[in-house]
Image (cartoon, rainbow, N blue to C red; front, side, top):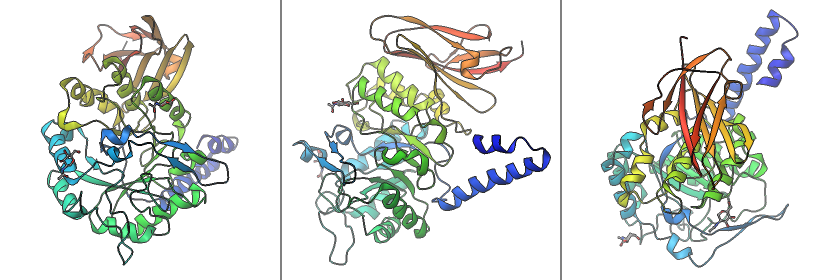
Length: 427
Ligand SMILES: *[C@@H]1O[C@H](CO)[C@@H](O)[C@H](O)[C@H]1NC(C)=O
Ligand SMILES: *[C@@H]1O[C@H](CO)[C@@H](O)[C@H](O)[C@H]1NC(C)=O
């Protein structure tokens, strides 16, 4: 919007109207072109696949001009070990742990839910061994718990596991099948393609979903190719900006860094997706998982739990159900917070606007060696110089004593962060 607004500025009042019209047209146009399903007004929250899906060791090989190929290692069998019992007990556990109440609504199947081949009539069918009751019955069960069911396919001839068909060339059939099962969400992957660009294959499914008449959240998973953030908003409700995350500090930080470059494209209805949460899978320390969850929250990333919630620890539950942190992610203004200051020496400030003139501010120490003091200066975080604020530490659940004017400084331990909500107060 900014470049157009600037172009309009030289002329006065009439141009203001033009500007408004232009903005409305652009937004309205984009909205009409897209799914227009009214979903994703805040980033989606839920549980995705299983932790096993997160650990899949997929190596993407992409040669420009050719279809990407996926190479899987022998863990493949293990990752496909998903069945209707796992999904039902996960739905039960989301409710029992209070995670459902905290906002984690979607229960998403990942790869391998379907039979290896289509039926004679050309439909996808549930794998009769692992989902004997069928997907409709599963959706009914999940809905009875007040939750929503997500399903998975690929914009290719097969999904990434090569254990089930993909939807390429069958978009309308499959979208109608999913809708007839009362599915609420589709994660759409990018394996076994025919080499046509993502910008053609993904909108096809988008249109197919739209014409079912059922609002189905559309989650694009094409790993950030072709600058998906620039067209994802006209196609889906979220789009992966990166390759697969894994349960390491390096991978987590790498994904959020790549995702940060596209901050301006996120808005209610469409979100950048740096991939699901590894919190609780054991590869990072408590402080590192707090950084992970804080960054995903401030960056308005989808909060899709990637660990086994049927055996979740108190510590993990404490991170994932922190209502003050979730509130930053789910703030209705829908502005993606981003890195606003890089001091070098691994010290950074991230910030994003919230409703009611508040700011979310994250002080981050990426270094592994020593505790350091990190300062959020008002010009960096977007607060006017004279403004005083109250600072709420959303991990300690404490409001700091006194007011802050001009800046806020805190000590931050290695591989740790502090996350604050700043609220303007009278001086
Ligand atoms: C479902 O998968 C779980 C986890 O792999 C396994 O323990 C269980 O036996 C399976 N249940 C059925 C009915 O296949
Ligand atoms: C995790 O991801 C990083 C890239 O962010 C990669 O370098 C590393 O090899 C991956 N590790 C595993 C175990 O897949």
